[in-house]
Length: 312
Image 1 (cartoon, rainbow, N blue to C red):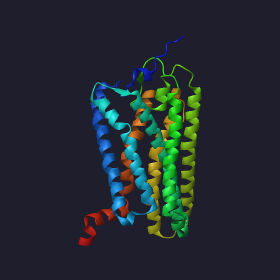
Image 2: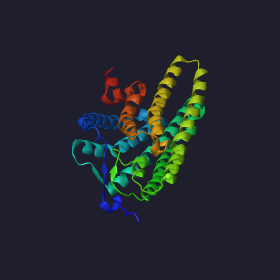
Image 3: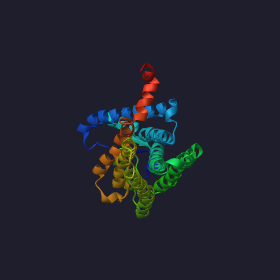
Image 4: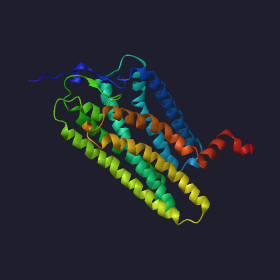
């Protein structure tokens, strides 16, 4: 009978991360630290500005604040550990820490998938049902929808992460990734994990493909409504707002589909690391830039906050 050497009995995992490229670790540390600081500053800026400026107390900026807070939590669940591992020779994480990291990364990732659907519905209601918008997106309903996003994400993660850690992890404790992720952990198992892989595919289809279909359907309806518009100003505003949403959807969903919509054995692990690095580090730092660079509402809020509008 094979002797089981479970990581829980040893108390830690070794996150190999990018140790295959030791000459790149310092460069990666500097690049990831820069993006992490951009994520913190950019998303905190959106949250604080949306709270302080009464003109931004709208459903769109309420959900955008939720997205910014979510991105802050999502990057913080894995990036500080990655920076520590890149900086020094120690690349370990405790078993409990790995469980917590897996739970929160799954929960926050799932929450973002659902939240982006809600944000697309908000834009659909604003463009396609403008006369009923205040009724459709009543503040109480907005809070219920936001709560539903968070509850669905954390509930789903509790089930899936528990299912992952029930699998006996035998032999070595080296996780070939920079954070505790389901496909990387399943590779440590000495038993048949096809049921886990199937579960991962099903859950990914539910929380990635279905949200993506709903989002694209919303923007398809928006596109039809926009083409019927006569106002050039209205067209520019709609394209500016909806274009930003679609860009955020693209930079989030495309990498996630590359990781979770195929079995762990179906892709290069090194390739998977860099794809995961994109959606955990780059995407959350880009969201504030995408939403604010050409956003007149945000520019106006900044001017009001620092008093430029009164001076002019």
